[in-house]
Picture 1: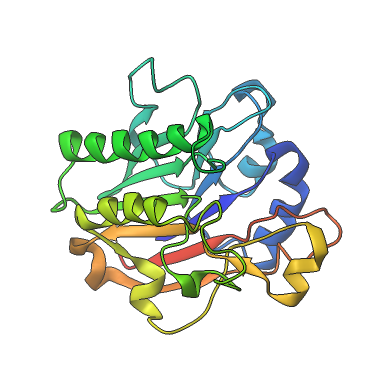
Picture 2 (picture 1 turned 90 degrees about the horizontal axis):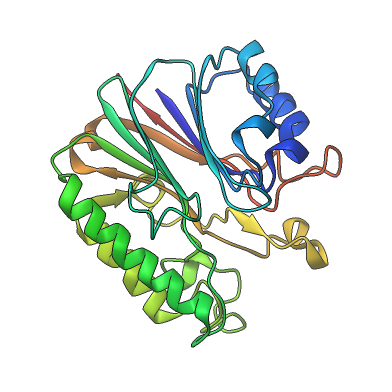
Length: 261
C-alpha cells in the first residue's frame, strides 16, 4: 500500500496539478491524505479523483480554512471525522479510517504564531489534546499510520538555515518537545527511519524562490507504529508537484510511504 500525505493549500486550486502528478506517477498511490482543503464537502472536486480510481472519498472541511480528506482506492472502514469533542472540532483538522489492517489518522496541526500569542498557545494545547486522544483511544501495538502537516521541524537538520530560523514558528523548543512527546508515545518517523542522514524538506516559502534554492523545512511527516516497521519499504518526498510554475503549486510537496501488504 502506498500512502501519501499532501498539504494542497486549497483543493480547488490544486486539482489540475494533482491529476497531472498522479498520472505522471502512473497512478500508483493507494491512499491520499490531503490537508488544508479550504472548502466544504460540497466544494470538493470528486469527479477527477473518481476517474483515477479513488472511489472511496471522505471529506471533513470548512469554508476558507483547514479541512482534511481521505481519497482511497480501497474500502474505508471506521471513518471518524474530528475528535467528537465540540470544543476541539470547530476547526476541521483530523480524519481517520481503517484501510485493510492499517489504522490511518490524517492530521493538519495548527500553524501557530509568535511566542505568547493566542495562536501559539492554541497550537501547543492542540498538541497536548491530541496526545491525550492517542493515549485514550489507541495503542502503540496497533498497526497505525499518522500522516499530515505537523507544522514543526523535529531537529535543526530539518531546516535549511537553523541559525536564521532559530526560535521561529516551527523551530521553537517547546513546539519540538510537544511533537517529540507524541512520537515517544510509540511512533517512528518513517522517512528518518529509511534515511537517517539524508537532508529533505517538504515545505518551501512562495517568497524568494526558496524551492529553487532548496531553502525549505521538513514539517510534513508519515509516522508509523513499530508493528509496521517490517512492512515499511521506502519513503520519498516527491518534489515534482512543488517545482511547477503551472499549474500553480502548493507550498508543500507530497510525502509518500510504501508499506508491504
